[in-house]
Amino acid sequence: MFDLDLLKTFVSVVDAGGFTRAGERVHRTQSTISQQIRKLEDLAGTPLLIREGRGVALTAEGERLVGYARRILALSQEARSVVGAAQAAEHVRLGLTEDFAVAELTSLVAQFAKLRPECRLDVRCDLSVELERGLERGDLDLVLMKRDAGGGPAEGIWPEKLVWVGAADVDWRRVDPVPLIAFPQGCRYRDRAVHALEASGRRWRVAYESASLIGIEAAIAGGLGVALIEARAVRPSYAVLVGDGFVPVPPTELALKVAPGARRPVRDLADLVLAYCEQEGLARAA
Image 1 (cartoon, helix red, strand yellow):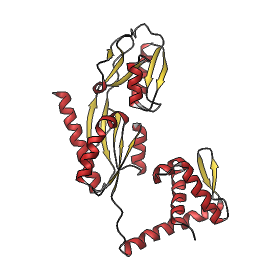
Image 2 (cartoon, helix red, strand yellow):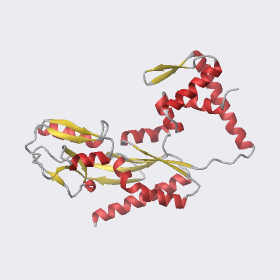
Image 3 (cartoon, rainbow, N blue to C red):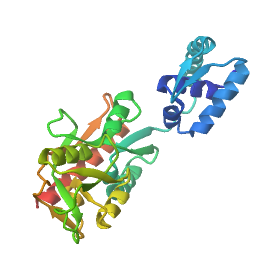
Image 4 (cartoon, rainbow, N blue to C red):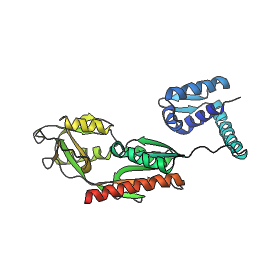
């Protein structure tokens, strides 16, 4: 007999198109996913997947099995419902950008835990482009993401002002090429910084790259280069840079997006995020 857990992993790999993304969906490591697929192939007595770089393709036998696997899993879930099995705890999946999550996550989680003690909350921190893809794929229930100003409807929208900063004890006007501190490729701040420097004729190079806000802040304070950040992230040790190639850039905005047909717990968390962002906006305007 095929183990339901192995079948679920198999279907997840097929739907995700690879082992890494499948692991993110079922909350397991890539090595665990690989072991389960090998075990299923041993039970089936034949290869089911062909590894193609980071992706996978079905063998002929794998293509036959995946249809049965989906039917078996659906039938298992139906049986659980019919016989009155206990409902799984509500599961809410929130996506946040790194710079928001570091400071504000703790208070939001605490409030949600008091409001919905029966719920499990999963939080993913990533670049906005990846968060939006996760929402579109159904991997996330709601996301608080950065985007271009005027990006369309959302549950809540808050404008952002981007400024150039660097360590205060360095004359960045004389540094050539400009050493840039940035998040990985795909970050809107990074794209705007590069375009602005090129448009102004300043030469540049990436001096430090990190997916962590803590790493970015440490690099700025340590004088490794300049960065384009949101105004609320400016620290006393930074110098705000104006002119000499450090020109104003198009604005961005923080947007809260919720998956269509969201469940009540998802809506409750969205309300908490909305309330926090509104308070933060009022504090900045005061």
